[in-house]
Length: 64
Image 1 (spheres, rainbow, N blue to C red):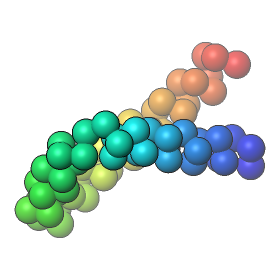
Image 2 (image 1 turned 180 degrees about the horizontal axis):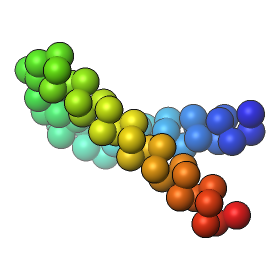
Image 3 (image 1 turned 45 degrees about the horizontal axis):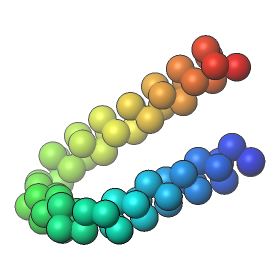
């Protein structure tokens, strides 16, 4: 549970930094995402999910 809360906190820190430092770029990215088809968005989401799982697996396997 501690790991999940830590991960959630880190996500919020990174997201907050992006909104604070480059709000214009985030607005542009949101517009690009808004124009994507559902299939494109699903593929991008699946790619992000796979990358996240891979990172967690690598850290758990080799850093501990």
